[in-house]
Every structure is written in C-alpha cells, then in structure tokens.
Length: 149
Image (tube, rainbow, N blue to C red):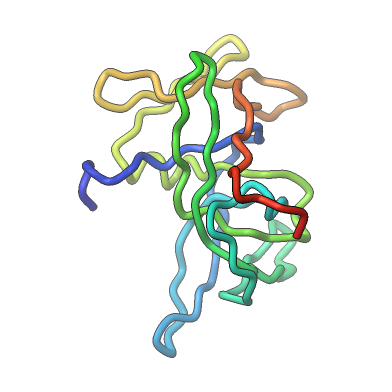
C-alpha cells in the first residue's frame, strides 16, 4: 500500500483492537480488520447497501451497510481522513482498528492513561484512557453535504 494515499484515522471515537470482518468480493469471502462507525451522517458520499458481515466479540454477526471515509478534527485543529470505515448501525460505539493503523506504518504508544499514534515522526492523533478504553481527543467533521438520512 502506498504511503502517498490519505492517512486512515478517525473521529470522536473509542480505540480498540481491530474487528474481524467478512466481505464478499467477486464471490469470495475476505477476512480483514477495519474501523467501524455507527452514524451514517459522518460519512462522505454515503450510499447505503449491504457489503458484508462483521463478527462481534461474542461471535454474533452484524451487517456492514457501507464502507467509506470519515473526517476528524484532531487535538491540534488539523483535519485527518479515516478510510476503510464500515457503517455498522448495530454497533454501540465507533471503533478504530489499531491493526490497520499498524499495517499503514503507524506506531502506537500507550503509557500513564495516554495514547499517541505516530507515523514518520508526526503525531497523527492522541487519546485518553477512560473506563479501560482509549478515547480519541478530537471531534467529527460532519460533511457539508450531510443531511438527515
């Protein structure tokens, strides 16, 4: 994967290990990790359609109704793009896949209730630990073309 493509990061969200997802592509099932979002208003160019299944921790399946990009304004005011985000209406929270960030060449450091994600010496995002989960410091950028859908 080229590092020139937009970096994949996320919004006001919880950060956890990646989810296992089964996507049907060209008649084959593909297993991968991806980010997950429960609000379709956060996506650019949203088109709802079933694209696969996500397996939750208890093994129960949830439908993935879209895969796209979401923008987030991070701690320093910069806007980042998170790609490969699955719209999963039945999720209870938005999730970032640390496995996917690692695949993209990011480094994740945690200590003392804080987390930072770095790539190429640049701090891309940070988080604070709350209730055993890391919450991203930032906010979602709702697209201008977003309407109540």
